[in-house]
Image (cartoon, rainbow, N blue to C red; front, side, top):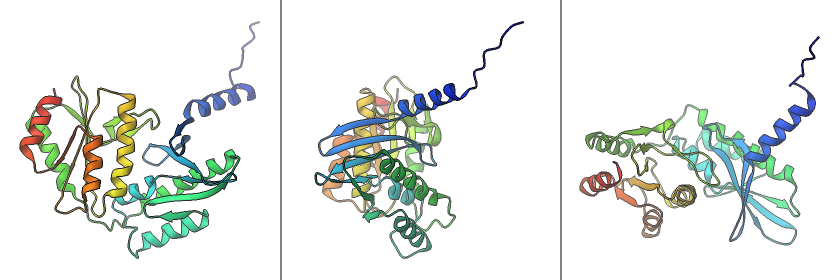
Length: 266
């Protein structure tokens, strides 16, 4: 009589979970602290990445680097004005004992580090991120930028993926969603800036993402297209885009964009 070896037992289950958690956690030292990727995902499938900065010998600040509120804004939830969405955000920030500084969500924690503090902060961010499922989308979107660039790609007969299928990866962020990703020998990732309002925090966030993606794939060509007439740009914010992108243009600069597409889109 044969003895069947069970592959479902407590030890194997524990080992499987530990292996998964270990594979998903990534910690990198930066100039002013740590960058930490957690085994948690936002509702859009993007991994939760935090920064931790030492303030004193016994205190540190853990931050989302503006990720969550930028995402809410990107989905059209206006949390900058006195709206129901803003009230819900403020309530959650208070419940989770966080602070809000512009687009950034942060919290004071004690040193030496306790893993539960970091994990609970990540879970709190995921909870706040779920505000994207509210139906009141208050902020107008600049969708014409997306549509214009898409039409240019089509007119240049470039094969590309878009939206949820257009994903690149970084060394820290395993999934970075862009708007379009070409299928040529030189991958061209396109991000259209559809949000309105102040761009500084948004571009600082994307500056980090673009550098992370380039570290992972040196051949990647990074591009962004924006609307200077209906979005709040300043010289420093535009310089961020120019420094981290090979192609950074107003969406209506057709000739320059077509030239870039002819070079990178094959």
